Image (cartoon, rainbow over all chains, first blue to last red; front, side, top):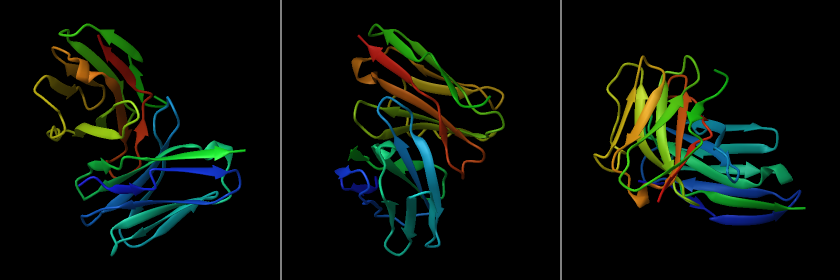
Length: 109
Length: 113
């Protein structure tokens, strides 16, 4: 039931774009995205509810494709502060999140 | 409070001892979760409290683990007869209803020696 995140890791130069995918084998109710920096707690980025919506703030946005049971996180014009491990959490209507294994993002100047 | 508070931040204990980890969620948040994160790994669900409902304990790895939440606020995770494989960071999170984004505490790093 654990969602599959891809890629496992990505290295970018500052200013480049990245896409992180989160796929589930089961119908989703919602998808959460979090970023965790080394040694710190995960920080909430956004939540997407079923309905195929797209959300975003600043240069980070996400989409939710209910048919494909997939969500994608888009980071445009990446900044050094975007470095960290990104986790998606999938929820099936029972308020319990099942977390992906994470995608490690490294931004180089 | 302003955020989710966890204590202690670090705990080193001898194998076989019992430990108690505390979580003080954001005031008014009805949902409270405990997760475990081993080094370089993802988040492993342990237990979920929602208001006065019976907790979802489906993630507790063994009967050595238990948790309670008093008065719908502070929660304590207890690990009895600790084993080395219990070493991890234990994270607590709360959310207003269980439907919104979670706010995580800074975690308790447990080391069993």
